[in-house]
Image (cartoon, rainbow, N blue to C red; front, side, top):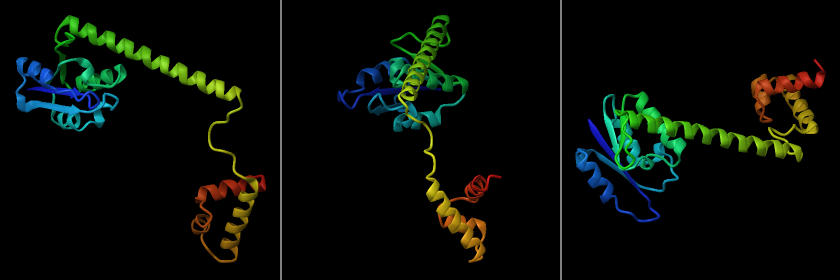
Length: 194
């Protein structure tokens, strides 16, 4: 079955008539065209029109779009979405871009896009790692801050008192100071040098 999808920007107050007309001319029944008027910065799966369409797409269906960028907010989002659809047996055809997975050229275009998306992903990872390395050189520490030793000692005394003098169980006593049973045993073990 053929389905269509249009997306226009809320910012530009665009009308999807051009996209809709192209889809109908390509053989998509108007009742099977789903639309979103939303910012392109929203990932495909967070859009209501896309979500409704995605629930209906099945193996051997074809999704027709006016341009491939209507599907996602970035090349990575587009490729991830197209790969997910392909894995489910749904073919994607983009009218303006000439992307049709049933042709050699269409498959070539999708593979080139996937290569560029992978390249973009690697660049992002490099930039993130460079930022983390630079922050570490400046003395920024990552992860959970070290617990305050005085507070840990006070909480240990409280939990041990509740267990020994009040007769509470370990779980209930530890919970009174906001700890789990495992946290209590870890701190107890560290304080006794076990």
